[in-house]
Length: 560
DNA sequence: ACTGACTTGGCATGCCTCCC
DNA sequence: GGGAGGCATGCCAAGTCAGT
Image 1 (cartoon, rainbow, N blue to C red):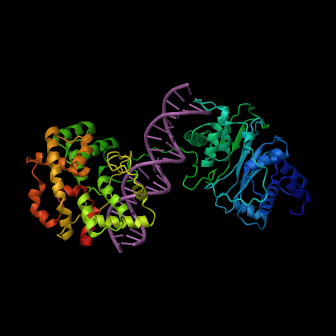
Image 2: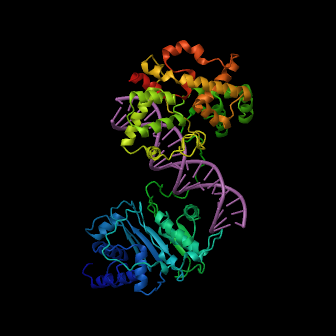
Image 3: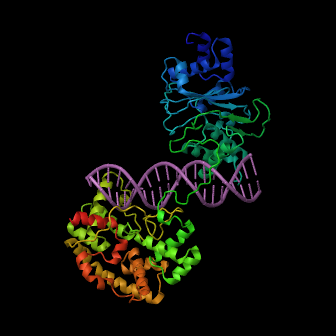
């Protein structure tokens, strides 16, 4: 074929032949249209010609003075293996997506990471000649967008934005998308079903639509296309279209005919392939992550109510139980069972306030002195061993550049844990997902009791002093209100210098004691004194908020 | 110190539905 | 049929935790 003068001259004239030209060439030579297409592709590859569809279109427009061909147009994606065979020696790395016809569009992909296994034929049945945008039909794959390798050595005429028939000022702010806007969107959609950021920016300029609107439109169009009567066909009616005709001014029809799984648009890998037309079975699982197995028999609504109640108190009062029974329509036994199970689930994280203390310290120094560790343990009420571990992990994360909060703290751009602005972990503002994912990391070891050690003495030393003050405040509050109002939690935490969990647990303990008919304000450490002497600082209070890991580690590491 | 499993929130996308 | 609202779902990054 290389020696065929007709092919050679045609290629020199324009490297992207139209379908009419290909048909003509096929008629004049002994080669099939497919062979000719492949030959042109190979030539372009050989000569390093790789124009984007827009460039091809623009070049063609200039060269042919805007002539619009009237033949139906087909976009063919030729599988790499077929192409390589036909290209006779060329590497099997070339795929083409070619509009054989007026636009003469071709893309080439180097690397062959588009697993096309059978031809995809896109038939463009005529284009309205007045619409420049709709003539920009292309099949431009942008797998991961930036990876479209271009070995362009021949530059096509540059595109000038003013050529666009549309401009931003064409549009006014209308709730419905204008024809022009839709035309742009459709044109873009035809190029790529998954709009890229660059394309969004372009469309935003052209259409004055927001990013969200554009993305939404693309999403819906993809969905509608799949769910249309014929999932392989998408019909974009254009204003002046004459239906039922194959003429150039009829509506634009793209026929996507591919039997393989390849998405018509090579989207970044994270996007799942476009599924075949299907009705998604309604097998929605409220707990798709399969956590919290024990509680799955409860509906999400029930769980929300229960969780909210548990946050207020781990041991609901009778009054609260009644409320829960009414709200959840669960039996008292069920609710009791839930709370019992829920209480077994350890609280695994330090409070935001405690984290704030640690993070602030970490910014000051990644290697605290023993005295500083002691001080931090005192300030945060966290076990010293936990703090040591936390610093170790944080140093490692920081070293690997994974400590995102570090720079925020370093820059001083922290509003504090209670403000809700600086830390996304602020418990007051922490968002819960709709799905209940729970805390359920399974524990392979039971929480060990602490043995005596020097560091536990440190842990225990001063907090008790603060704690007593805090308890006095809480007692005062309780006598006044008789329950913990969540709205007052922030204030209480601030006043008492206790964590959220500690405050909550204090109220829970009071309630527990009331339920048991005991003095609600008797200091737990008074009765547990002996045990505490032996076991370190793990009072009942601390058990709730202390990260279990710290306990576990603290024992295994045993106070370094 | 390091690794790997896990949790969590944010975001993108798919899907359904209703309204015009 | 197009447009938009809203929920479901999947993916990812960041952070946490258990174990070596």
